[in-house]
Length: 308
Image (cartoon, rainbow, N blue to C red; front, side, top):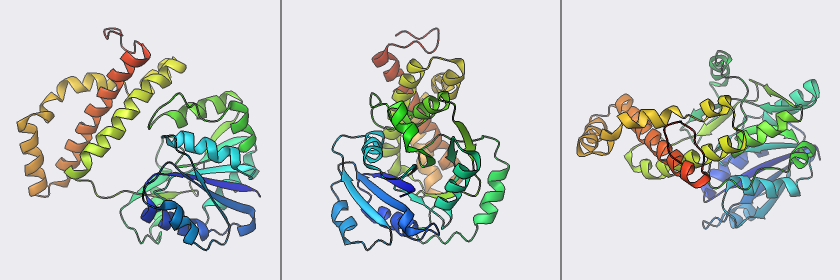
């Protein structure tokens, strides 16, 4: 077994079935990779759906009652048979050459962390027709390699060596970057393979999605502070978005009646640009709230004037 694809999931049965369909259709030899689905305490009969599938490669189901995708991934790592671990999420659509492209970079560069770009889609029947155009656009993206575990691979022996994901983190956000930082301290280089592109399924956002999105962003804000506490450098302080704490002071109005009226007007008139901007500001406020909670919880002074 060369590759173990690890997918944490929570209550995404229908979407996960599509995700697995794409992973079954890989060009990489079917006897050389396995798929490990780690169910993070779903209540939507994910287990039964997995059992009903006929997989051309080895498909394994694990159950993890403790909440957190990083905790689920740790269980997957411990049970993986592959030399290389490929992390994807349960809303990631993998083009047919994804596994092969990750392996190509491991063969070419040796001791590396390999990531590929993720582009958005709202099409459940995706056929990757525009994949070359998407790659071309990402070619001009200067953000560099990512350490986000929606599309990332590394050899299992290095994950074991650093102790896997840090389970002091709770909820969502930053535990993948923190793991990546420890891996790079071992001497591994982060490499970005444009050909290892994936499509990230996202529903078109509306006001109904805001509460769930805000909760995810709040959790991410709390974890940002813990990440900085563990690695207190200026680069990480800047990278976790401390500017949102300043920006938040100018966005108070978005939670007033006037802000709600503006939301309603944008939605009624299908003003997508304004609606997306308002949603972004809402999420920025939730992130700043999470950072303030994290500062109190973890007793970390991120900005000089903020009390612990």
